Length: 145
Length: 145
DNA sequence: TCTATAATGAGAATCATTCCTAATTACACT
DNA sequence: AGTGTAATTAGGAATGATTCTCATTATAGA
Image 1 (cartoon, chains in turn cyan, yellow, orange, red):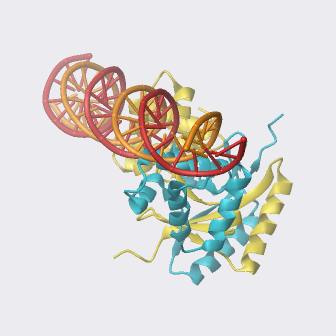
Image 2 (spheres, protein in one colour):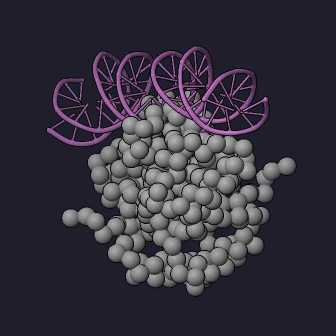
């Protein structure tokens, strides 16, 4: 395995929750540990096929998410649309982890400038050419009992 | 209509592309203009029902995206998973608009500190309590012909 | 080893999204 | 206003992703 330490940490976490660290679940975490970005169920299936059928894979993902080993990159698998920035203005997002709503925030110029500067610095560090950016802030909105 | 100026800008853009600004399309843009964050097709449908059937709604979304009036909040409607940050470390994302891949970037500490400071400032401006954040940088990765 | 419980495999069911085709509508021109 | 043409829509069928169900298998502990 690529990363024994990581694997042991996961094993520990699952043990604490009384959940087994089975072959299929190991296949998922180890594929994700090797990946260099978030992967979809289909992409994972391609990587670890044919050892795990899709239905089991989805179950493994759900279990691993439940115990906090995995996180979904942008919650639900539905497309959400918004007006383009030339219409709505440049903004960022507040993502509520409790109710799933996403709210826009427009930042005052001095904060926005600092973000833009950061993005440019990151671009100059890599071979990636940034054209736009969005700061996604997760937390809880003020609307819950 | 809530926002006549905006509506005229959209009308103009569609006219430039030789595309009609029909009742159904207006219903979509005006609902999005009123919304305070990105909406899914189902949410939009709920808002403007029963004037527009779902299939037409999807087509409107596609057309409006094509002419640059709408943008999807996080591309494809598939869930992608990654290891939680306590396992993978805190990182941000480079989203390639050409091929759809998402790569992780881990930032050097001085940059990360600047982002954290920003997020805290934003939190203090609103009723939202941030628990985590991710900077999503869109652009093109270095891998295309 | 035996038993109770957790996990898997395979396929059916569900939900979001896309596709298809005929009927309708808007637009340009008379 | 009336007509021809192309764009658009409605509605339902088809697809693809995800979830559910249930019979079977594996596991941990008595």
